[in-house]
Image 1 (cartoon, rainbow, N blue to C red):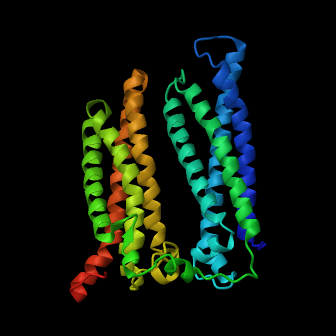
Image 2: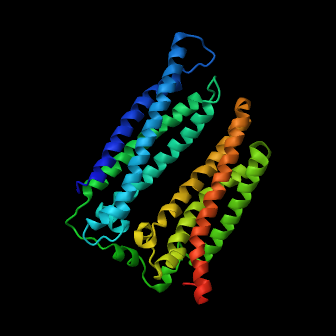
Image 3: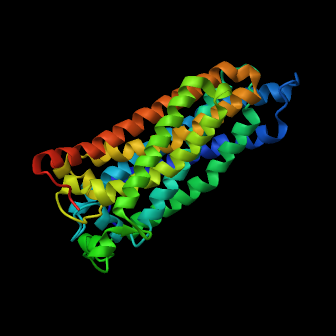
Length: 344
């Protein structure tokens, strides 16, 4: 293990967030069992007061977890590569974690996704004095707890497995995955050209559904919010794949260097930060748009606020997707204008 201040900050942030989460989960469990909004009993009044404190505690947990995740990404991308022999980017750092780094980041993404949906529902719920979403929110918050524990456990194992004495070879990981040149141009049996066509078709579907969901609203365009959520879930992994396998070459100016972590380096102006930040926005706002639309139909008292949140989700999704497509494709277009060819 490397006793680096940033890694210590990650551990402290995770532990602090988990303590806040457990405090909120205790009340959430009581809400899921005993919530009775029509009751005037003292137990219900105390439970409503406790619900407000639990929501605040859960927000503190989310803030601590988010801050710890950002610190962890900064450490992986721009700090730890200088401390691990042979590492030039985050790929080498993840190699040094003994296989725990990737699952840790994936679990943290799941935790943040559930937390984010809970936060959206909590904001909608707070708009009404009767708190119609309180039981559902409580169950969703309880769902965070096991995933949070798994994410923290994987992060701890990744940090403790880092060996500053054992050399790694991140470039070997990138290039040794290909048997030959043709394998470098194919993923899951499809060529990069096919994946590009899939990406642009999904992009067109995403923009169309997002625009319709934003224009017609959830009650008039429910089918568009559903299609938007599906398109977002399909578009994000496709966009990440095309970025790493195709568009990154115009930043690296090297063929078949399929490494996402190098995009976070200062040599490439940290372009990976906005590019990969846009993907979770699309991934989360698509389902949020659908959930808000369904809430607007199911709960008439939340119709206006839920409809507004659905349109906001569609707008954010469109902006994030447009920003990603612009940043990913402009270097390729500029290369084509300069040299008259594409990098293949």
